[in-house]
Amino acid sequence: MNTPAHAILNLAVLGGAGRRHTAPVLAGAVVPDLPIFAFYAWQKLVTGRSESAIWGDLYFRPEWQTFFDIFNSVPLALAVWIVARARGLPGLGAFSLSVLLHAACDLPVHHDDGHRHFLPISHWRFESPLSYWDPQHYGMIGAGLEGAMVLGASCVLWQRYPSATARTPLAVVNFLYATGWYMFYAS
Image 1 (cartoon, rainbow, N blue to C red):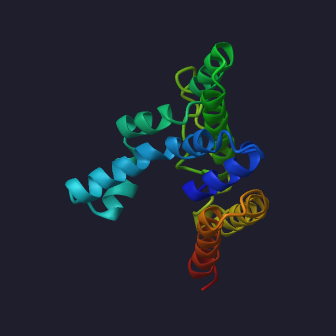
Image 2 (cartoon, rainbow, N blue to C red):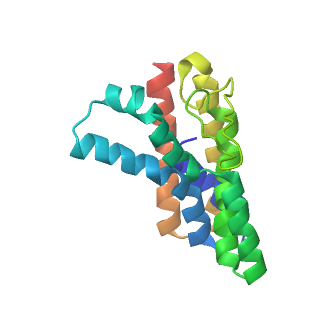
């Protein structure tokens, strides 16, 4: 899934009406993808690598995959959740649950670019037949399902957060999803 989709979906599912844990839920939704953003920024801006080198070769190198996979580890997120529960740290618990939801949403929509979600216990990597972006693996369907989930979660958040500060990013993200899907798949 795309990072904005994780943020919107996780906030709709885990944010609750009290809004006490909005920041930890948002952080847990995006932290698993931050290493990929840092990797891309380094490769593109510092080393000047091409898009094809970045996504066709470097991204799939074992050292980078391990770096990305650690941030998507279900056992590590569960360990953090257990510690948060034992220590009475609800914000940290919300963060770790959000990381777990991120992983659960990624599993069914990554074909050859998925993570080893069970590191350090296992190096197994699930290769879904469905991709959230790759047309060779039903990306049009995966992107459409993701867009529908974002729209549905956005409707929940629209009701929960009535301020323009919250609603403006929701409207922008939904517009970008609709436009991107149309440009990439329908044209």
